[in-house]
Amino acid sequence: MGTHLPRAVSMYVLAVFSSVNLVNRMKSRLNRGGEYFGMIRAPQSVSTGGCGFALRFEESKLLPVKQAAQELGIPINGIYKEESRENGNKVYTQIGRT
Image (cartoon, rainbow, N blue to C red; front, side):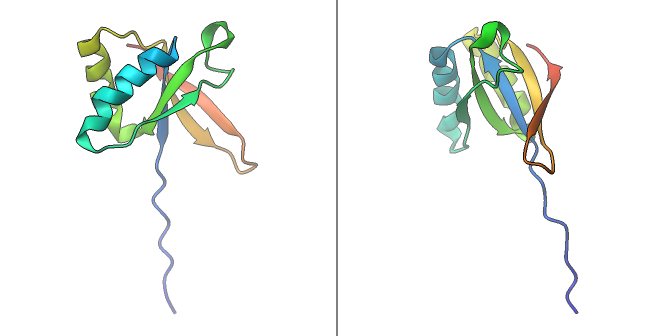
């Protein structure tokens, strides 16, 4: 009988910005190393003022994201850990700011 190892679960993080332009500048800087950073419309539960865009990436990439934001002088409105529930819904917990 084979043993089933649990699949490694990637934890994703959202870094929320006030505009799509700022996210694109961050993506340009971060994607140079061949890594993938996605852009999404920030969920309503995490976007201040009802609009915003977010960079979505694996939790292990948080430090390079913070460093790039600092180097570019781009403020991060909030940093949130993304968790998926069994029913498919996603929950976001704030874990920091810049």
